[in-house]
Length: 168
Image 1 (cartoon, helix red, strand yellow):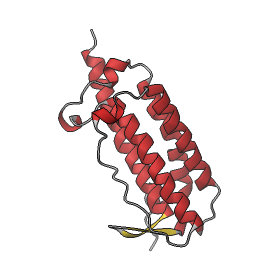
Image 2 (cartoon, rainbow, N blue to C red; image 1 turned 180 degrees about the horizontal axis):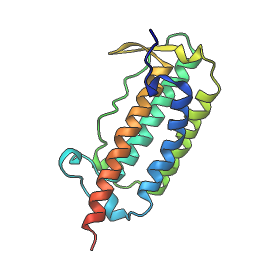
Image 3 (cartoon, rainbow, N blue to C red; image 1 turned 180 degrees about the vertical axis):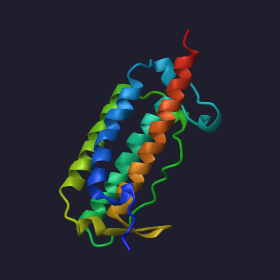
Image 4 (cartoon, one colour; image 1 turned 45 degrees about the horizontal axis):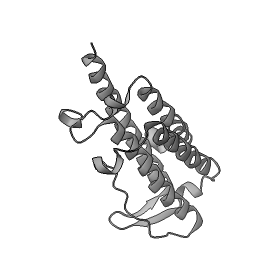
């Protein structure tokens, strides 16, 4: 019987998707002003504003990149937990410049993509030991970043769409 594969199981697909995500996020933010970026979300998005999403993506990228670097340089290192669900606190990001945040996310994502482009098929299987989940591979982390990107891209589009409808 032929093995059924998901999009997140293919390293080449993941690399392409991860490489494109920062540009997709930036394009969703382009038409929006500072006031719109600080506007609280509604319903499912009520703990977020668009600037919080950008800061969150940047911070998650930085932390996950650290996990990947450790896994690729050491044999099954202990890797820290990265909370991909927690929104940043307003006081922690309110003074951030959205262009700087988006540039930092773009730069970090490019570094992550370069790191992953250079690894062999066996290195995708390299692992770290997560404090709650146990053994986690490079492929697992890349897949999580991909899914995390999708969730927040949909969120950004949903929130930006709501803001566009509210404009006079």
